[in-house]
Image 1 (cartoon, helix red, strand yellow):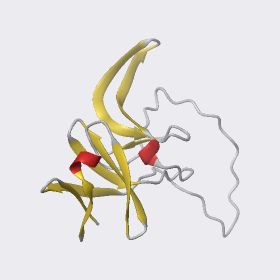
Image 2 (cartoon, helix red, strand yellow):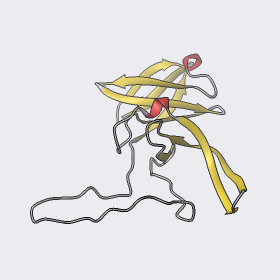
Image 3 (cartoon, rainbow, N blue to C red):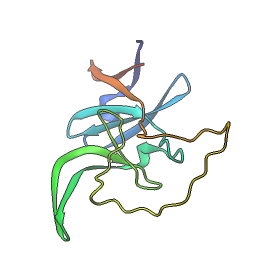
Amino acid sequence: MTDHVVCRLDEVPAGASKRVSINGRAIAIFNVAGTLSAIGDRCPHEGASLCLGRVTGVVRADGPGNYRLEREGELVRCPWHGWEFDLKTGKSYCDPTRLKVRTFDVQVKPGETLAEGPYTIDVFDVAVRDDYVVVSL
C-alpha cells in the first residue's frame, strides 16, 4: 500500500465530505462526527458521485409509523437512486422487510453474463498526520 496526502484536515470538517483524486481515481472522504472514511466515489449502480450523497444512520421499522435509528452516520446514500453503502465495509445495505421493488422477467442467453450482487464500493484506510488526511491505496 502507498500513502497519499489528499487534503488538510480542516478541509473536511465534521459533517462534511470532500472529493479527491489519487492517480486519476475519484475518492470520497467523509467526516462523520470526527471519524474519517474514504470510499470509491462512484455508485456501482449508475456511477453517481457518492461524495454528493447524504450520510445517514440505519433505520429499523417495527411496524407502520414505528421507526427507530439504530446506528447513526454509518451509511452514505447515493444522491441518484438512493442506494445505501456502509462507509466502513463498502457493502450495500438493505432491510428486506422494508424493501419493495418492481420485478421484471429475466432471460439468460448462452454467452451472456449478468451483474451479480451484493454490490460493494471500494473502501480505503484513512489516517491523520500533522493535520493532513492520508489515504492508503
